[in-house]
Amino acid sequence: MNIKAWVEEVLKGGYEYEVYLERKRKTTIESSDEKLENLIRSQEIGIGIRVFKDKSMGFAYTTDLEESSVKECARIAMQVCQLTPKDEGFVLGSCQNFGDLQTHYDEDGINTPLEDKIALVIDLEKRAKALDSRVKGVRKVSIKELDLEVFCFNSCGLSYNYKGTWYTSMMAVLAEEGGDQSISYDFVGARSLSDLPLQSMVEEVVFKATATLNPSPFETRKMPVVLYKDASAMILEAFSPIFLGDSLVKSRTFLKGMKGSKVFSEKLTIIDDGTLRGGFMSLPVDAEGHATQRNLVVENGVFKGFLHSTYTAIKSGERPTGNSVRESFRSLPTSGITNLYIKPGDISLEDMLQEEVFLITDLMGLHTVDPVSGDFSLGASGIIYEGGKKKKSVRGVIIGGNIKEVWNSVVGVGNDLRFYGNVGSPSLYIENITVGG
Image (cartoon, rainbow, N blue to C red):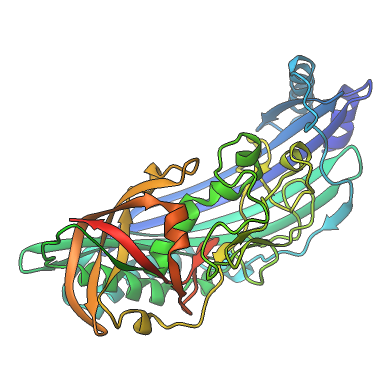
């Protein structure tokens, strides 16, 4: 199979090109009521071809890697290129030959018998029930395995290939006491099956589900709030588009024109690090062959700059930051996060709970946040603490406002950083938020 020769046979007359080939094998195991509920296994291969000429670009993809289909895919991309308006950002990425990249591949996890993986998923529900008698079962628990191979090359000399593994697990627990029910969920990710922090996931989700049983009424008021580490991470992920080059060039971020300005609390430092050791999205290069790097996004409240792909870097007069990502061979590269996290502080969660404070353990409605303005209104559940002890549980209240105000009101950053896939955060102490009963 000589894809390079086939593409070059079609693309004559000054056309440049990039070929992105992907082989993907996925396994999803889901259980409920201590028995297997779903087992899904799939495999897919395909290529995406981008064609460039005179600041125009065309794109096409195919799942058929026979010679005739690859050539037809290149022809379609060329025809699209001829019809596309010119744009100065339409240029190739890196031209460096990296060859075979060293990335994390879990041979032991891939070769673990399917029966053992199924038993592991079912065992998670048993662990949750053993931790607390109020846990009556799970709505769903799953482990997903991704085995991915990528080959990418272009006409100016870029060439790289790698294979990697990714594992995720999700658990939704149902707790019940005195006729009241509460559901909570948790999510973890790792590059190896054995590195999935499954026991800590079980402990976290059982704590959150049982802590909000039998809630008390709550009247609307302003009060200090502690965003538990997973709630803070979910908010960071929901608002992560404000840091992306694509949002900048589309004028869809309130951070446009704010580089070098203090925009949040000096307690807040946000980092995107594609080189992070053991990071869920750590790779030597991004989707266009630029070396990944550690990018300070916010440092002590000061906005340091956007995360760029080739296109957004050119459009904004910046350099690529190693943040070009692709969802698959079917999609164009765009700017995206790698391992995005809030730098931990030195305060323990216990110390944050000494005065009267609302510890938010669960958030609902994150898909409704507005990254353009920063506005949000979310359902919240959690625990009112006073003097380090639980005073009452609260469920179904509303927190709202603007993320600029929330991150400007951070007065304490916890030492309990945890990653949820490729987004991480410690717990954050927020000075005052309006909590609606």
